[in-house]
Image (cartoon, rainbow, N blue to C red; front, side):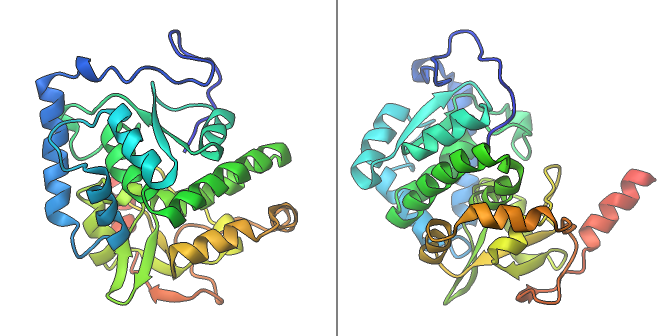
Length: 290
């Protein structure tokens, strides 16, 4: 998701894009990508939505080293009309939404250090490309991302970006999907994380709740650790449908008078796949206090 920063770094274009600088990646940086890629590829089959693995094949992301955005964009453009553009880091909301609305996905052009394999606060090229881009090869999810970008432009005009950000967080970044073979991962923040791709499906701690748009837009989220609840969609087609066919303006007005829902709360009307113990969050809170 974007940020509220507004000072454009030197050397960036008006839309905050920069050259990827693929030729400047070092052997160590390519090796870091390969290590992260191999680790996730061993772990994700059987756990991730099949559309994600299909996207890896379409985009040929199994080739060694950090992908060249120009080559990647050629294949993505042929599949769904999207392209990947490099940015120096987080970009302002209006820039982010404009890129999505025009079927451009912004990706950081830097990669984490070898000592940061398990956690990096700011999204890097592995999170952005491995985590996000495979599903952009899926026509339905690709349309959802564009619809979200257009919705973000409307939300900005209504002063409702913070509300809509929750939709991105709980779907694009940390979403689960129901399949005939059980719950699967699809959110980029999960599939690019070695630890959370286990936690999100297997740990008894988090709640796993059925997707409900209004409920989700009221729900807080945490940015500093594993999620305390995950929302489960029935299909990408359903997610696209509710996004395209909801008039968000009245929804924002309705929710403005309602309190936010805390991350550990289960509401009486929730569809509950898993009623989590919340033990992980409690342990972390106790350790922090101690």
